[in-house]
Length: 151
Image (cartoon, rainbow, N blue to C red; front, side, top):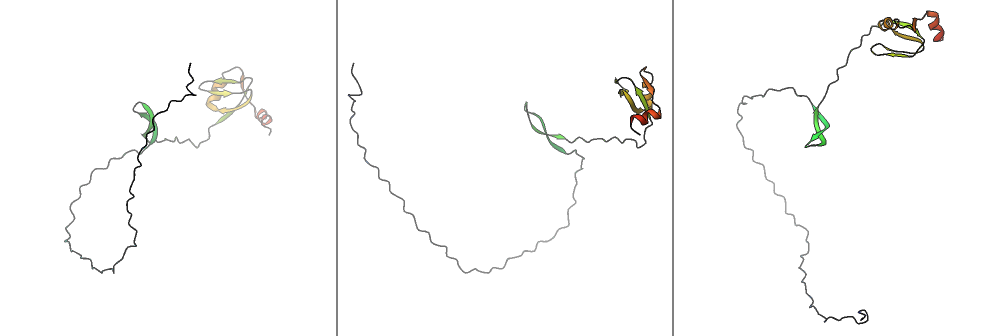
């Protein structure tokens, strides 16, 4: 077997002729020469003023303002516009509701009525009427309430 590294193959040498590129001639920059300003008076043409034409107004329809929101854009989630939703505030009555003190021996939750805990509980009168139907709830005396709340 022959070792190629010891006997490298030689290729004939090819000589290329150099390409001469001519540089473009660049003109030197000269500062601009300013001439004396010439005063010219503007010509004002008088245009006859016509009476204003009758303006036709389009009806203005109330529109809801829109804000940017996330939404469906060509099957993908993207930024779209959505109408502004107005929150309706419910006015709570300023009249204080009548409350009752109850004593309970258990923690109990009653859907539609509320929650009471072991000890003294302050609830509204309509809820107290329902809680008093339970065997573990009794009316609390003023002395029990004062003792519980430290007065």
